[in-house]
Picture 1 (cartoon, rainbow, N blue to C red):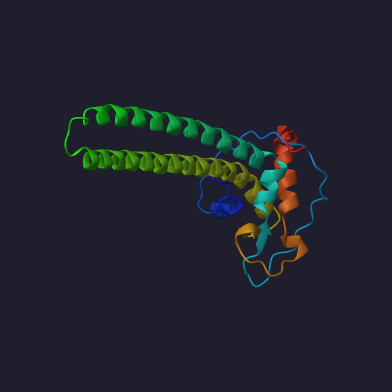
Picture 2 (cartoon, rainbow, N blue to C red):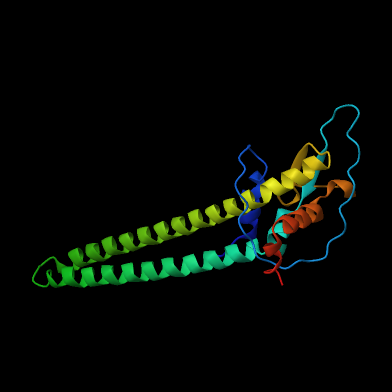
Length: 202
């Protein structure tokens, strides 16, 4: 079950959807030099909404949140693998016990085959449940990253006069003006608000 960067990006695309504002989780990465914030241009006189974009993966990477998520997912995967192996051993023991009861049965081959098939089905179901548990945990961690970055991203974008903020990771951006690309501004604002978030990225 390989960790999918594409999956991460697709799910965090909801970063600015809705009005909920989760408390930013404490991140711990290393401060990296970034260009000074650019001045926002004036609002469109015609009242058209101004749109900005940013790279949420870059913010998560440089604040250490992405690395933390990957470590937690790996640890969870190892625990689930151990649980699955224990489950397999229990099924094997049960199969052997049931098999001994069939030694005097004239229909032994057919019943033994049916018993083995039933055991295999139970193990596959265990694998499916383990995969589902890992995926649910991954989604939970992605949601935590989204909630951590969301308030800061909103504050930066709206403070610079933009009305809509999109993720450049999850859409085809053919071209964007420099002043509408806010990744560095959002990263700097997050690191300024949470200084401990500058210690893990090194």
